[in-house]
Amino acid sequence: QVQLVESGGGLVQPGGSLRLSCAASGSIFTINDMAWYRQAPGKQRELVATISSAGSTNYADSVKGRFTIDRDNAKNTLYLQMSSLRPEDTAVYYCNADLILPNMLRNVYWGQGTQVTVSS
Image (cartoon, rainbow, N blue to C red; front, top):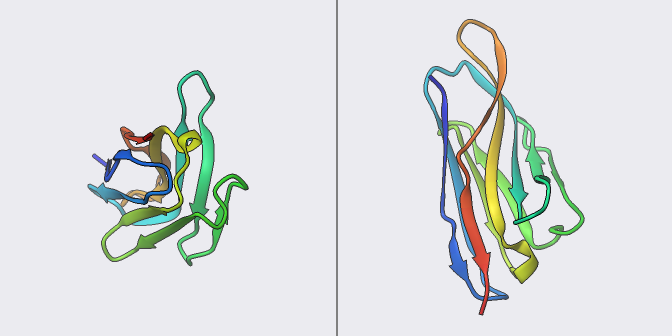
């Protein structure tokens, strides 16, 4: 049973910073791409950033220069450092992992989400 568990969300003032973490646990052979998504109230879930197993990254235009995605492959953990936060960054943030199980089956898993609220 594979689980992705996010942490690090909370309430922060505009201009502040937060660091999200997502730990993958269970029977995992290897993890390919990982990503952060977010969903604001009344809006569709959107891609925030992706990172490959080799460390190549991509960002949504709305977060470029403010957010940094990173991963620790030894710990099967994904991070999102968020700086210069804006009220429009308020959303539930979800991590996503494309991974290979020990039986060589490939599957995509989602975390349960962590709330980030940017407000004064």
